Image 1 (cartoon, helix red, strand yellow):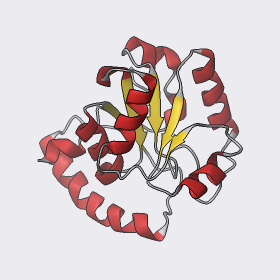
Image 2 (image 1 turned 30 degrees about the vertical axis):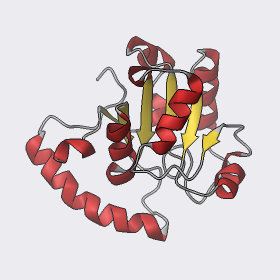
Image 3 (image 1 turned 45 degrees about the vertical axis):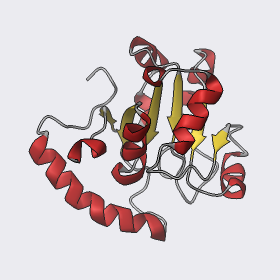
Image 4 (image 1 turned 60 degrees about the vertical axis):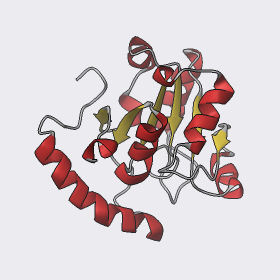
Length: 176
């Protein structure tokens, strides 16, 4: 049961994961959570680091698609300045959003990675979809009210994960 929360990789920030590292692992598309993963939940403009990372992905031919539980209007507004495609109302921890995006791109499960900052939604959805995952540290130490509930349970899950998988550690990138 605990395995559904375990990420394939743990990176301090998605911005340090290069397109070459992704390609070396056979990854042809990146699916990412939005709030506190790509952008701070309270700042939809993103950072220069995000824009540089997005540019490097685009140059490498790796599409980036937002997979969010938020409404279409909320995600469209948040991604407007970033010009990113998205799947809203993804129903994470279920795999619907990931599966829709993957099928739309015509990619196999092993060619996709899901990036997110939450064990309960993002990592479980990746496991349910049968794709690899990258857990990242949240961009901010604060969350929207509804995410705080998940964080409460995540603290307990983390303790269990660390006991069962003592080698789990934050990495700078996928090559650590």
